[in-house]
Length: 422
Image (cartoon, rainbow, N blue to C red):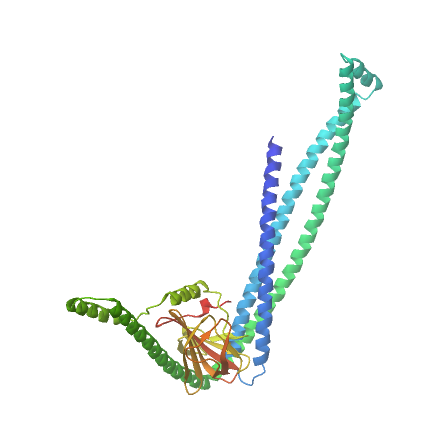
């Protein structure tokens, strides 16, 4: 009974274990493929900026991104090693289960052989048949003897099957051990690559520090441009709020018939409410905003082959502090297509002097695309996800193209990175 419980427990453990490992293996393979595809893409971008005479923020950002991807790839390999270890463990459990079955079959077969040996005489065989009480009983005894012989043959077949299964499992274990050895070698290669990339990043950081004076001018120019852009955006949003407030008041005045006192009271209440900056969204705008929210983390990138060189909010770039109202995205070259990240309506197209800006409304959300050399849309036009709305301008350090991308909820800047598809 105890052996039977052990066998059943092992069998259930192995079944559930192999099912989970199969799912885990598929996920790991998909994740690894995605990481490797992203590494190839980022390497292509890096090859385009690595020939520049001076170091750039784009080069540093790409190296940092490569390091992050390399860390993820090594993490994926570590998971694969653990998965192989689990498969080896479950394989040993399965071999143990089969060995217990084989031992049991051998004991049962040995008993039947001993019994057959003790009773293996023609006299005993005939005596067993002729001692029957009736003819039918004799036929039943003959049938029993045939069944017993068939049972012994089945025992032999079962023993041979278990022996073959055990041999196959041992071969599979050897294959898994070889696979683990190969993955460990790959892990070492990736660790060496990570160490090399860290050295390269440190070298770029060191050279950037020597260019601090030039970098300081570039960041100062960006701060000035950001301030000008933020002022324009704030003014545009205020005009939208005021226009919607007036439209709402006009609708209310048309549908309301009250006394002079109640009218004064309503006007006072409305004026109080108007001091709060909010949007009077119609049903379509509400649905658009809700759809925008549902796509958080899945919005497409506004450019192809872009990498974030300056993140959102406060950060230190090349030893200098900066507070970015959005994210600064570098591309391999200027003039690349800039695309709308979601359906919406163009609220503004402005020329900032050293570049153009396109502002698109998505209900209560706004996406802003600046540092454009040109815009292919106009105010009031409707755009769809992925539609080209302009072209990227040149990066501040001359290392390629650059887009300043912002996201606002009503009149508040938020970090766009979590909203974009990784």
